[in-house]
Image 1 (tube, rainbow, N blue to C red):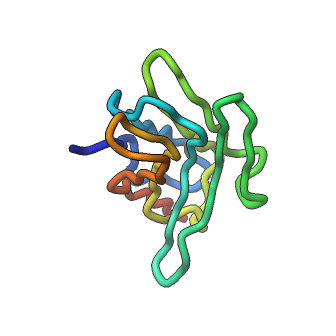
Image 2: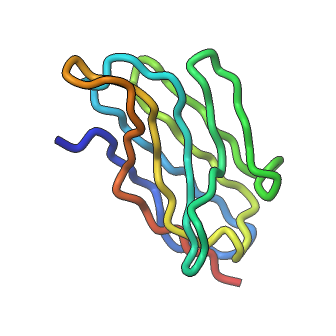
Image 3: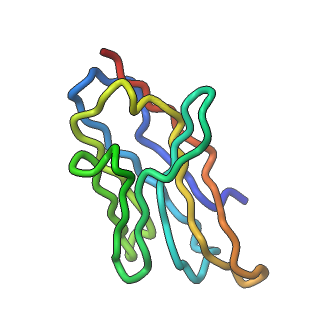
Length: 120
């Protein structure tokens, strides 16, 4: 069963905007942290933005002031609004959730990834 489903990636010119959305399966009954990571070719996966269940947020220095993470507890989604995109933002973006289901303990769930490509 797919626990996280991402959407919203694509191709955009530098300076443009994209909004990524991640729907979290209702089978994950308790959530601690949610976030978006990215991995560019030849580079390690890095945290882009995170949000706790209390609403506290954290951002990578490279995206501060340009990206905004938000969570909707009713829709069970975590979104990433990306503005003023730069070619360096090109990567596969992954949604992640630290949570647990009725059958498992706390663990880190990952989405399948969505490609974001920013052209110069």
